[in-house]
Length: 212
Image 1 (spheres, rainbow, N blue to C red):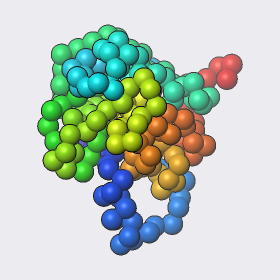
Image 2: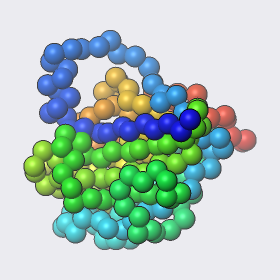
Image 3: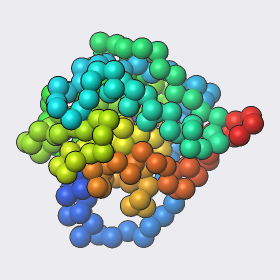
């Protein structure tokens, strides 16, 4: 039977309110119970980027998203590689189109900054789609690109790194400094660098690559 998992990165305010009501014990990485059969994951990017002063040029944003995907290989010993196949016109969360796409939407994400849908059969992931939202909770999201994110903006590379973590089969972690923490604290820039908890998670899901 074909299965689906949908995971979102939320605004810190929402998580803060939830945490005030319930504070679970900190635990290690969590998985979605699915992983790719091989470590090669093809994907495409829709360059329908936000036209904002701080978000960077089209080329810069393509590079930022590609770098965020590659961080899961560069910062671990996992036999895993995201392979960028070029641009696409695909948008949204379409599990049956055969395209693993990253795109933006002008829709409001509610309490979410971004969301990733993975699909597959049994314990095997067969596809994913990632969407980053132009607005959340009725307010436009200001996205920051090449430079360090100024106050009030969100880091494209950090947020995308979190979402690629879902694409490989990781769920949210309770460790606040991990890339897979459920909220984008401090504008999300720290998400660029994998925490030891994130590394343990990806190395649990995938074999060690030769020579690592």
